[in-house]
Length: 470
Figure 1 (spheres, rainbow, N blue to C red):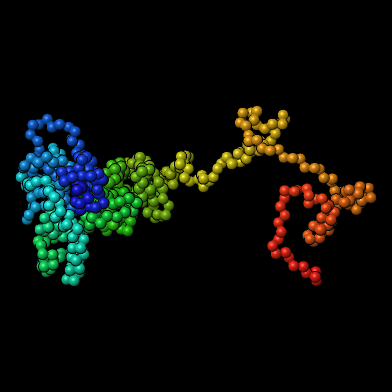
Figure 2: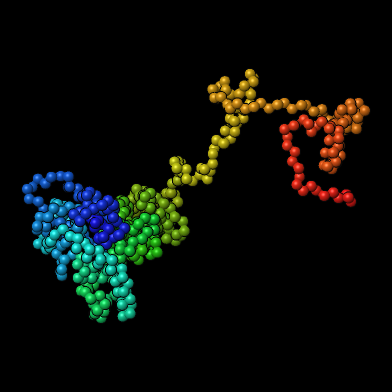
């Protein structure tokens, strides 16, 4: 039996090695990839106090955690499957944290120790079998619940279903834009499933966390991997970061603004604290100018005239502060084009060379050719580059020198009388049919066939037919 990571409702996260109902063999690393699991930093530290903390944190399906009291002093650790008190009946969960860290978690979530329920026992084999059978029914119950809600005509969506450990209660998690009347729906559910019904509404971010998916960044959604608390995100966050208010780009898969907009908000607010107000105006000799753009990273502000807003002029925030102080003293500043300093182009070094088109080409290809040609050239001593430390080359068979042929004159008929007969015989003759040439050679050299006695004579199976008209 596994420790519960796989059977606790999320089949994508499992512990791996064999576990028992008593818990994981490795108590500190059970399900570290699962967002409901907690790493116990105090597991290797002995408690100096004599009394041991009897509070335990237990996790269930659908991001649900609760705190319980170990009144019977059962030896528990992370990954132990326990049977806990519930109303009605009992429930089955997995221990996610023990020790002194549980008190810190309860203080963080503002849970009192008096409201903690009891842990009955470690889950036995019967409890585990009932628990697993209830988990297998959840997908079918969810589809049937959606059909019933659609037949009644309710504008809601059943996102997930959770059975209690003893199958005495079903909790339906749903999302809806408006208020839903459940009186008829609960009657239909109770008659179809024959058990106690509990309806719980969740937000669209919680729904995306249960469904999961891939975000626009290419990674798995934060809400389905590690994010547990969902903070509100408004459009002012996008304005602080100088982003265009485009709902298609700023919205996540839940249809709301992305949670990651809050991650860098504090850094932007710290940087903007040194900037003048975006509603700053400058009185110049040419007219009034207003701020049209801000660059947080370059620490610059763009200004344009009220009359002609097509031309923009960028200034550092230090210079803008000096210009504002002059306006406060009642002085008008120079025109913006006179204050604008020429930009000095900075030479950037591309270490990765991503912008070079020829980064995949071999730059030393021409040098390699010259080097190979130099290696093949013989030295004065008649040897290659072996004497210069280039290493011995492979022994190649020397080419036999061809017999020199007599040079042909441009006009063969000019000195035909002076040429010897041998050269006249070497002149090209008109081509004859192949069969006639072979017969002529055989008649001229009858001993030619006897030169290669080992050569086999292959007879044609189907000799060509003679054409008398040829």
